[in-house]
Image 1 (tube, rainbow, N blue to C red):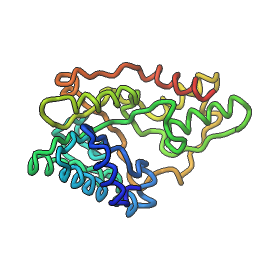
Image 2 (cartoon, one colour):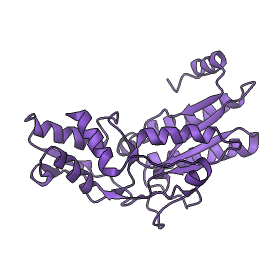
Image 3 (cartoon, rainbow, N blue to C red):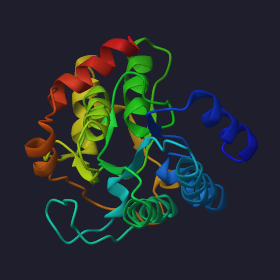
Image 4 (cartoon, rainbow, N blue to C red):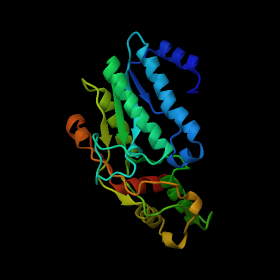
Length: 259
């Protein structure tokens, strides 16, 4: 429980970690519009609390903070890097932007080893059911199995930079193995429309998505970036990181697991 200060401090005192990966908190952009206060509390305030706990350790651990491409929002740049202007369009994005800045403060003011991982969309068969990619894959599987006859989604024209989650977790670890802390964008550098994801997922099950998918306005967010694409040049050059799975193979892997 991120709100349980005593338990958090007790865990750090007992384990004395060398590396700390902070991945907890409300992680759904759409839901952040419905519960903005909880989202801000869990992402922003709890990150600050955990940095304070790390700072108080006799041997402070190296810290990884999970940032997000959502901090860039409606960016004017075709691909965003570590120096791009922040322009978040959701409570989630705003809270993550706070984390980015507070991470910088603790790194520069207290010499805490803090890395912000600015990760673009990363998917795998373990993706939660309330995220659109898993909703699509499981929806297509259910239709193919005769368990459902339709799927309702929001805006099909949004473009995202989708990669394979295990690659991104490896990138997180790589960041904390460096001599000096820094921020890194992890992304494939290629975007696809949600309709492309739909088409490939349904094709895997020999289905035409246009026959089954309906747009429901309740799934359209009040404000949503139309296109997000990451420039991971720094991570590729400094960490030696690169994505291992193509867009189509990622979708096939998720579909195979949903069968």
